[in-house]
Image (cartoon, rainbow, N blue to C red; front, side, top):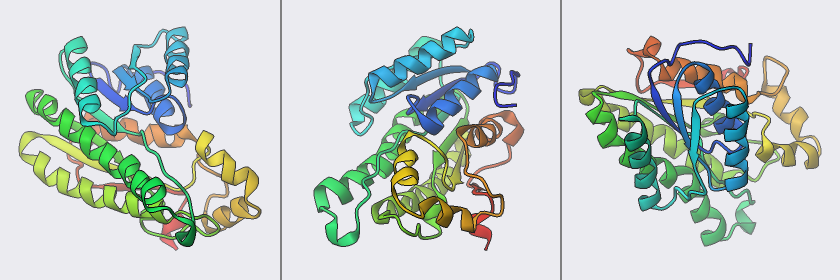
Length: 260
């Protein structure tokens, strides 16, 4: 199932940010396996290059612009212009790249932790959407997929996730407003809100915070942690024409955690 090939995104040009690891990597590879032409990016050049090499080994159409820091407006514009020039336009934007600093309130530095997290989780989405917007309009519409989180709706016990929760809540609200702005242009904007997915970023708390995994699983109706492929399959649906009547929606991919 995870490596299954198909044609659900055939003929689509997809820009996927944060392809070097985790959910971004999983989505980039899955989109390419489903027939999309994927242009990715990552701030970590080595990680992005490894993803491109993995795709090439499978014969997939995936390229990358790296290293690229999407917290700068000119970098976001460069990525979208590069993808459009290379492949004639953009049909899909997936904003998977993010950065969050995890500190308890009393230990949180305003600049280094709070503001840096909001830039790395909110500004980075805004800038990419703004840069992609004219390309999507020129194409007659398209699909934008942003990432909120289960933590936009519930606290994360045992984790100093204050800034992260605030950032993901902002992405959820911003995406609904973007869907309103995009509607007249045929641009659909949706969010996925995952619970804990096993990635390079989440392995640290899973391995080093006593009781953290058990605490997370206690809320899950399905007693396993998420994998990037769990998210990627939903992303395929939201990026494809199968979801042509879906916008301003939030998909809770959380093993039932937020349903309690």
